[in-house]
Image: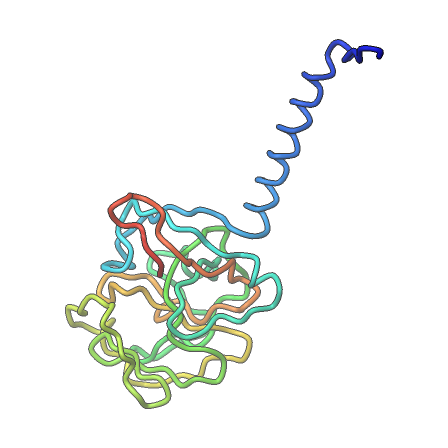
Amino acid sequence: MTKSHRRPGRGLLEFVLTVAVALGLAFCVQAYAVKPYRIPSPSMEPTLKVGDRVLVNRFSHRLGATPQVGQVVVFNPPTGADAMPARCGVPVPTDSPCPRPTATASSKAFIKRVVGVGGDRIAVRDGHVLRNGVQESDPYIAACAGGEDCDLPRAITVPKGSVFVMGDNRGNSDDSRFWGPVPLGWVIGQAVSIYWPVGRVGTL
């Protein structure tokens, strides 16, 4: 029997190729399927706290899944969200949520909860969403502290192909009330779980 001989350097080449394939797969997973995000503000308290890290499912959205009411999503807001104060895409009465966003998307990524979809009539009473005239069931929110941001009784209709989003911390959230609905094409994906810190691990 003849003894087989491995060529010098072949083992190293195989290792390098294995690492390269693994890194490529990890990049593809993050780019197209699941991506981690860190929560930078208290706008989603008590559901999400500053410093929480969440996993966002981007794959189903790329396959055409439509966000549903109650889901927590990551998205690019309209550029009106970058202004101080936030800017609606059209003139709006002081007692009304913003009905239309600015025409272009911001490069920032926000995370909020979907409270209305295309065709829904949305108003706000004491921080609670009235969707098609019915107050939402919202045990997950922090109470609104009062003021005009908490009461926007003049209902608006969410445009088809858009979602209306709000933070769970209703008295401290920069959201669709001020800069309008978010086109579906600007939604990055659904936040599905908290993965850090360990004591906060769980699904959303």
